[in-house]
Length: 123
Image (cartoon, rainbow, N blue to C red; front, side, top):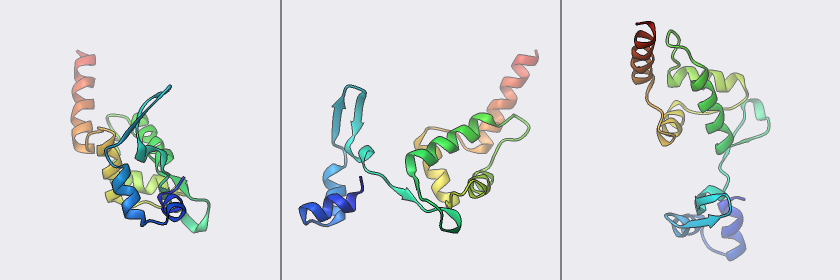
């Protein structure tokens, strides 16, 4: 579901629908969700392929970060390059925004944490 679809159906501007759904929540059998969660943000694909949902892209970013090793921590630029190879066209700033929204530290902080954990495990 897109904000634009709802806006057209109720004959209001898309920004109005966005404002109305901000900070409003719905309790469902699967948990509490902000209304904005139910609206898809599509992200364009490389070379005109199928677009991707923002949620699916966030999942890919999390998976890439979970797979990194202490010796090869991925920067936001590295993540952008890997996503492009997978057909997702995304800016570095967007990767940073999604990473921060998921409470994932920067590459510098992750590298420090992983090295510290490796030292503790090696002791």
